[in-house]
Image (cartoon, rainbow, N blue to C red; front, top):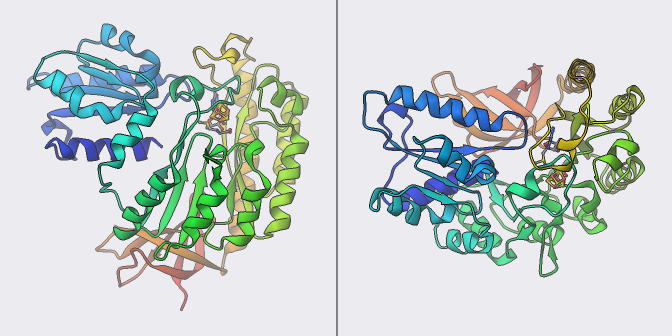
Length: 423
Ligand code: SAM
Ligand code: SF4
């Protein structure tokens, strides 16, 4: 979502006459978009500011803005602590950039804009055409979260759940498709809670499924509790909906899930996985795991390990629990750091092995790839993704960008499949 936000921020800056530069030392305005989901997010911002100060020691200082969830969480504190920062604005306030820049450039004032103006934000953004049509594009449809998992900072930094109107979304999708987009990933912190006047995520997917020019639909990130029957049905009825379901489970222990306030237990999770598989047997899963949550015993951890054997996870994203300021879990007694790190290592070794076995089985098989860009034009190397979002690299004489081809897999590593076009 930060990538989507950064692109929209760029659209707004272009509107007031700025252009993007790859060369930091020539910048006149520097925007730092931040994430607050895990540890040391605030320290990283000050480290970055320190580096920037050094770079501009003997030059005119650029305007420095900090946005994203760290800005939202720290607000005024950030302006007090670091005089080099000219403005902080939260993820729900970035539509105000023209006003913010006016205050800084003309009125010479420092700005703190951290209100939750999500409706106003999307209303303003709708008036600006997105210039960000890539073969594969992101589209934010929902923001914020009302679930309040005890470990998570999102409800505090992104605010309450808000769903954009389906008309706005379809109009933005049309702009993207007209600009060359072949794949749209619908985004939301809790995307399957999407509900705009009873128009649900499944309705949106069905409508996108009918749009010519669009080849693939994905969405992320979803909560297991909101994986409703209508959405499960879309995996049978909408052939453009890709068969990879990212369904964060966090833990294999129902006791820990309860302590996390996840609102689902492990049997609910298995039930959802089964329903999805029954609807479409080609579906595979990926998931997020938090290791070493306060109260996690060896027994709980073993249940999480056992989960890896029970579900077809082709990708597992695992993190040691990180206490986030202001969340209920930050007040709990954390488990020994060494134990948590050791468990993470054991977990990742096992999940890496599963990924390796899965990839091994793909050797000599065909996968259908949508090519997104060239990595190296001279060498003729092209990058794309298969239906399960596996990264694929192929060498080819002709430009493959924007095209879908079957690829025979000839090699792989932990992150990428390598192959050749199979005609
Ligand atoms: N809405 C999604 C869900 O319900 O699972 C998750 C979105 S969250 C922004 C992305 C992932 O970050 C979570 O699935 C979780 O694994 C991880 N995460 C969030 N807070 C964390 C924390 N305090 N410590 C470690 N990992 C965390
Ligand atoms: Fe965070 Fe997801 Fe829980 Fe919402 S549902 S509080 S975004 S982990």
